[in-house]
Length: 352
Length: 177
Picture 1 (cartoon, rainbow over the protein chains, first blue to last red):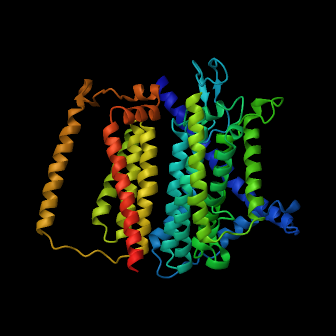
Picture 2 (picture 1 turned 90 degrees about the vertical axis):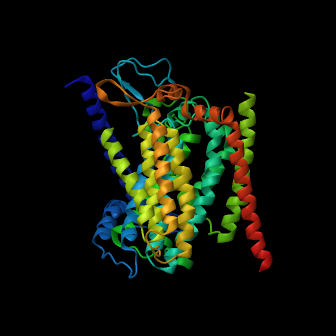
Picture 3 (picture 1 turned 135 degrees about the vertical axis):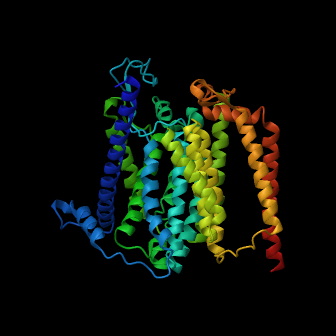
């Protein structure tokens, strides 16, 4: 076999392995996030939460999975069958796909001499192992693009169900996602300006002396608030407000079709928290200087886990906003603040 | 690469056909989304990652979401077929042929036949190696604010006019009511 063909084969194998790993890890993460959510909500409401299946209820997600697979797949009359079936698949695919550009560790050079210094990505004579599926020049834009496609799944699911609750939930959701996407993008431009790159690995490497959350506290708060809305979490969960809309856009879905929507929501939470970690919290860097940096993925996981915990904490602590207040908050508070933050950041970057 | 190009090209073509031939408006709009995403894949194959991301964010993620939104809200019925060989269809056909010939001729200008009878694109000032060395966003940004400043400003004026128009229309309706 020629060396060109074998390097192509190696790239294909590595990509496949990474892809399977991402799907397995995200799916497991989803299962245990539902468990964590139920346990945390129980703690906050002075209950026990699930504690019957396995030790401490740890096997509860497996039981839930079996239940979802075995449930009858009821579907409404008058639905648009093609779009009705397409929507949940699209939701899960977009959620899994978005994660592919997130680096969870520094590129490791196997069998070659590492480039000069920790900031160099060069790896002459060896095989550079990237810790993301696609090391893109414009990784951040790619993730934003894929998550913006996720709107279609929510909207089409709600529309194709032929139900007024679903349609109202879908309309609310689309309007909300489009509005908050602006604020979220503006909040992310701050770190991009500081790092001078859209490549996520470069952004993390630029934070080796100081995490961007200390330079961009405002940007971080704006992003995190916007992220709550982007993932349809309380206090911004109007698209599925159960007191008004039964369950919003996935009212008419049951069994694993609902499960896919549910999975997409939780994986989107992981993705959103990973972006926050990469852009503001120094990605895989150790939280304190005396801790070893080679534990990269562990630090990354710990930071993402902490953010996810805060997301859940917020959900069970705050009441829901009214819909018009939600839109006003997005357009009249978050967006102007994001613009001011961007202006100040550009000013200092230009001075520097 | 060739396989991916084939799949993306066929999907782009099917999407374009679907826009025109689909009886239901929502499916037409969704076919356009398919076409745009396939074009983004073609951009990726040309090593233009920035253009691919922008293509999806702007067209598929923003413009078409609003289109789909409006279509689903108004929920129009199935499209009525126009009678064949009406004058406007004839004019449309002529325009399509003329544009295809013009764009095809322009595209062929950049293509040369390399060794072994293979077709190659001409190497312009913005070949992937040059653009990647400088940074894709940097190159597009610099060109936009130097060489193409006038079109850029004219476009922003156009968007301003559209925004003012939208505000005026919505306000007028409220005054009438």
